[in-house]
Amino acid sequence: MVKVTFIEHDGKEHEIEAQEGLTLMEVAVKNGVPGIDADCGGACACATCHVYVDEGFKEATGEASPMEESMLDFASERQDNSRLSCQISVSKKLEGMKVKIPEFQG
Image (cartoon, rainbow, N blue to C red; front, side, top):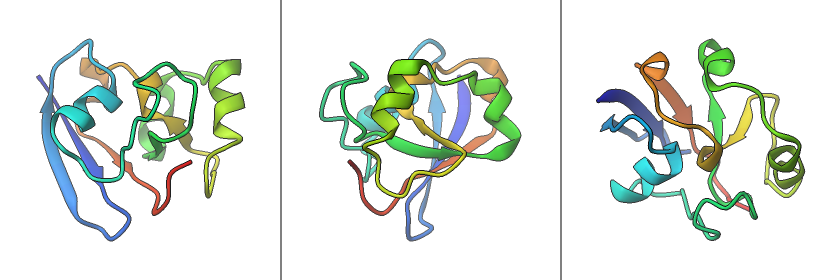
């Protein structure tokens, strides 16, 4: 299990023990984290699982694919560290990672 923390836009934290191999979106949905809507179910066909990745973990999460970049164009309040949580697989290298959830999705 890998400890990750989801931070709502108002600062409320949800520290979760995540199973390796799941996506951050799956972890958030299974644990009832508010703000991760996941309308497309993880198919990289929307931007309703948008998160801001902690700068210290940008390399560990890998590069966004061209399709993910395209979907991020629909994200509200996109930033340099924006990612779709459905495209980030949980692995040991994400231990201790914090991701922030924007106030609005899509």
